[in-house]
Image (cartoon, rainbow, N blue to C red):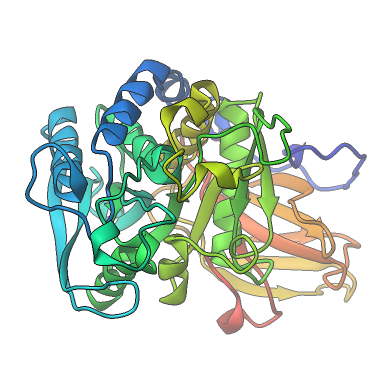
Length: 438
């Protein structure tokens, strides 16, 4: 059998367990670097990102209330350019506008047409293609002088960092990933109306819920371009990922997955997990999906610089292109890993049998033909999985003399190629109440 410590954990752990037969392909592939995913990560281009940001800046403003008819400036020109970029990447991308008529009210000071720009890379597996993973950013921008009066909607709002950086991340991910085939469906979205109250993402999240989309995760990129924070400190090796409570929520499992996959393929970057739905008293488009029950996280810089947000000074000169490239690498590593991964197992019972002092874990078989399963565990006070144990292609496992009162347990499916699913986590002792990521 195969045992590994969790990421960044360095302490001894000994379990005496009977030897299980482990499929050679799953055993050798588990936790190794997948060459195809590494090639995807290595394809991220700083030059491509710079070119995208220059064009986004050239629209002068992308305010949701700005001109929709000019071919050169305003949000209308910006969304058409994003649409055309998606179309140019691959004929396999299904590109569309998600259009909504928004009436006057709140920060919308006149009736306006709002368009999200969506590109879908359909999955290749007849069943797996129903599972969707979304990467998003918002392409609208705003200047602090343009919140109220309609006459100010044309005020320059270059929005290169907020959130041209996230939009460029989405475009670059689409450019690269659309060249590959994955079992599951990837969705690339540039939202509008974020600065007026998460309007575009709110409308798409509602549509997804109403149409019963199976969204297994949303990676929302909002402000991923500045390595120098407002304090003047350089954080060029660190990204933050925000996720909603509770500690074993589906969103938090996505965050842990982003950290594990991202750091595996981009080891120079530290993915710092922030266990809060977003920055204090603030929000982003991932929250729209959280509100209707979908797992979603925010990926953002290690320290914000408010001089590069909602101002006319949010220009390309405030962007660290090397840092932005690292952020995109983290994204595509996680997305490609998720898009290749098998489904997570559904949980059975968690009990203390046979001795009354053991941890007895049961689960149901995952879809398809899995290579095996990995049991993960951590102390109740630990943020990250501390122990990982490959247990073979079985549906029950007993950890001798391990208290279920002191540990949190989860199980993952391992594909024949060594790919790992999201984690299904036992949160109670009763199977019907167990929390499962599928």
